[in-house]
Amino acid sequence: MYPGVHAKERPDKIAHLIAETGESITYRELNDGSNQLAQLFWDKGLRPGDHVSLFMENHLRYWDVYWAVIRSGLYLTTVNKYLTTDEAAYIIHDSESKALVTSFALRDQAAGLIGNIPNCTVLLMMDGITKGFENYEEATGQYSAAPLAEEILGDTMLYSSGTTGRPKGIKRPHGEKKITDGYNLATQLLTELFSIGEDAVLLQPAPFYHSAPTAFSTSAQAVGGTVVSMQKFEPEAALRSIETYQCNHGLWVPTMFVRMLKLPPETREKYDVSTIKVAVHGAAPCPVQVKKEMINWWGPVLREYYAGTELNGFVFNTSEEWLAHPGTVGKPILGNIRICDEEGEEVPLTEIGTIYFELPEMPFEYHNSPEKTKDAQHPAHPNWSTLGDIGYLDNEGYLYLTDRKSFMIVSGGVNIYPAETENILVMHPKVADVAVFGVPNRDFGEEVKAVVETIEGVGHSKKLATELLEYCREHLAHYKCPRSIDFAEELPRLPTGKLYKRLVRDKYWGKHKTRIV
Image 1 (cartoon, one colour):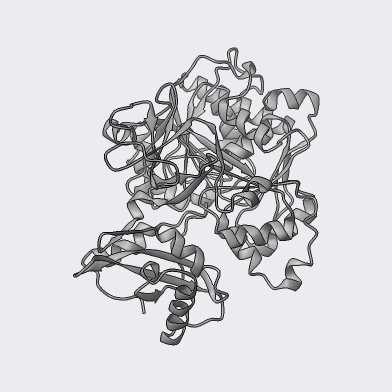
Image 2 (cartoon, rainbow, N blue to C red):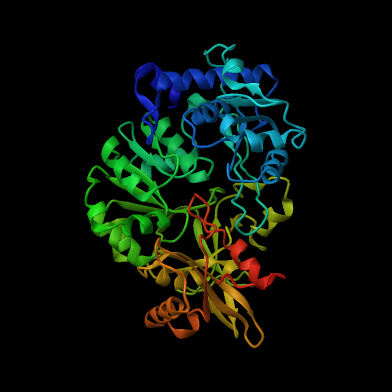
């Protein structure tokens, strides 16, 4: 199903609501708006297989654009609104987008795109206009709200976050399936594993441009549920939204859990969160103690996944499974897991190595980057692909993530995984966020460094650094603990929850030698 079906069966049901303002659109409005934009794209010459970019904040009409693309057989590239003009232009140009939709709120960045995205001949701006753009509402208002004569099923071509390098467009083969033929693979997986149906009220506190918010939000709409989105995550506001809108599903990342858990007890207890039946989390490994505390608070409603935008594999677990295997991200639902050493040889169970997923054929390619596509493939098995993560399987086949390969620290020949140290330090009551990585050491090659963001009201001092080092040594082997701790006012964590660690680490490996403190 898709919004066209729900517009006929339940036209006045809310498809999307903004938590902070209460503004909403119905399925009739979503269906009409997406049809009008689809008609505009066709009239402007876009055909199945062409590309569209969407550069916008969490906007009430965001999903009009998504469904217009999906019902037109096009590819949609969502662009992070926090990017600079140059970064956004790179993605729009690299994706070969012929159309761009943006909003008046991003007019300054959008104005700078003019002249840097030569393939884009259709430039639309919602809520107002700036030079070079057409008014979205006026342009789409000229078209019929009837569906296209033939609605070919489109897809997304999203870009990696770029936390370890230049963003890459993740492209799957384009088929000839029609939108009326049924769900795509992502929607099939998500609706089944996370019990998302027409009664779902999904709280979505992250930016839409990322793959998980896009996939979960549109899956909920595909089956007739309601998406309640936040324009910006705030821990108390998230709890208030659950209570106000009686949300029964939520999509989270571990840093959101940490920040909600660090609210004062009286604040946490003020809101009724008992309506939550499924709390989905992913994007990064969740510290064991954090997840235990969330299950104690919300009950065994947490369901975790490990997967990438590439959809080359999918790993899943319930709260009950996790409690029996603390720290796991689950068992594979899609793809067989192969753990390999540096030479590409499979390692025994419980040994750490690079995680590969085996499918009958390679399910994706990196757009305009055959060398990066090849790098993601196993050298001897081209149908095995990796996201660059390291981990191991236990004796029951449960997967545990260790860290990203690019962030592993090698100190005196010993492998150290920063996530293990980060998971300890983030539990200290004075720590809001932490990044752990390797820095140059003359004798050992690398040594462990931590950069800490403290909670509000806690200053930065040598005394606190010593306290944190001692805390770490109480819980970890000394060689895994930082040799030194620096402080930052705010760590560059993406709104999706991913830490932009490369930005922090590069300061210590380049010419910049100044300590943050």
